[in-house]
Amino acid sequence: MRSDSWMQRSKLMVIKLINAIGKRKAIEPLASSFPNAFTGPLSSYAKLFEILQDIPLILEQADNIVQSLQNGVNDLASQVSSMSYTCQDYEARLLSWRAQLDREIGTGGERQLLWEEPSLLYHKLPIDSPARIFPTFFCFPNLDIAQQVVLYWTGLVFMQKHQHNTEQRLLEYDANLPSLYSTDAEREAVHANCLEMAINITKALEYFVHPDTGLAALDFFGLPLNLAYGCLRAEGAEEILWFDVIFGRLTDMSPGFSALMQGMAKQGGGGKAFRQLILQQGQS
Image (cartoon, rainbow, N blue to C red):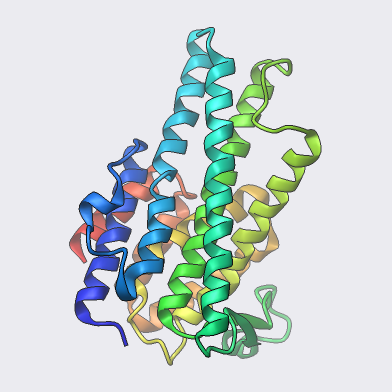
């Protein structure tokens, strides 16, 4: 079991990240805010956040490119190259972190990093319900690992979503402008992977509202839920119907929190939704 001190520090990391995302500006290194987080039980969590703290930098670079398109600035090539490098480096570090976590789980006596079990929520739905999307859901060795894996997926979706959106703006402005991708095949692969990660997040949500988990995970819930919902809505993916099931379960657990999450979802993962999330994290 994690101590109250660990839970509080991990919660502060989430709040710090959400605030930085809302401001869309690069932030100070995590180690300066949590100097003791990189040893002991918080180590893998802190190392993940050390990577995720580049999300605001990616957002800032994307904003700068869009601003340059609007203002006719001539250094687009260097800006695109810089964002492309940041995204590649960020993804490589995330993948390396995930590989290390896999190794730690394998040597730590746990079953595995994640697996699937029958969904209780799915089987409670009428047989003809269109929301019967996921007959199974992702399970994890414990809440600590679950939060880390879902934040890992969240980090990938954030980067790939904004990389794709910025690329679309470049193409709409001038198809001959520099690209954030090396090839068209890479562009398509990244877009497909972004959708897959959003679906993974959605399929894991039942773990956090499962009767065995209780209310312990709700502080963590808003960021991945909001991002996955926005991504699936933008794609018109049928998996978005599963959110009605999750919101129903949330209402049973915490009606006020469920109303907040549904209000954020209606914003579609945009800036207004993140302002709501910032306020919620600050009050919790």
